[in-house]
Image (cartoon, rainbow, N blue to C red):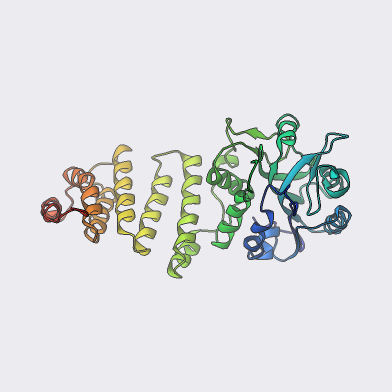
Length: 378
């Protein structure tokens, strides 16, 4: 997401929610993850400054910080987690701050219009705002009809959930996906990252904001659009994925691979070679993580997808997938898990005997041995 030819950028991390019983979201919980991301990644530039505001109190103070950020010449990225309410007099959206109450909303919360005004003076295309917001019942109804834009020239991505729960608080999970992906080493475009985050957090009651901020889509409509031309993100992701796995960060590696698989599914469709490739990457990552059952399942799914796509049983890639599934099945030390995976593997081995003679017999012999082992609890 590097913006070439631009000067240093600025990233503003703003997490705000009331410190009283009106708190609907644990907004500040996203800040440690975002703050651990390199500043240049947050801003989309080679070098950047990060400004962090955690549960600020005074709207004028927040406006001063926003105005200072908006005055910088380089690209600006704003990451906002919080909650939205409507003021009683004008019925316009406000972002709640630490001392916000519904009765004093106009004096203790940040009007959304202030954000729009400050960013409209900037050069078009140099400002990006990513939001993860919770709306109360009144704001939710208003947003479903009016949307939550920032005007032309400002890129807006995000999620608004609502109506807010009556008890407890929610978490800014949409923005947490951004932090997780970036900390894992992947560098997709914001449009692709928005689509992935929308998939990860699920529909529920949510509005997912379009890039120009003018047309939020309801959860029962398509939640996002594919990247222009279905293009995959630039710079090869495999080294970063393998580096994470080699360092023992298996969750991060699997998350990155899943994101790229999701992108391949959107761009090329189920059963495409691109999607199958990422399925196989995830299967191999499971092997590296010491999870032979999941690896076996992945390689079997790959073989089945290749066969369903028209590849023949003597195709080298099909045979390799079945051989790897077989090998991972042999590594299983849990008899019940091995027994549960055996029928699918036997069916594949009957279709794809492989170049090594006796592979099917080897599966059946081990299966007989497994059946001789008492199941747990017997």
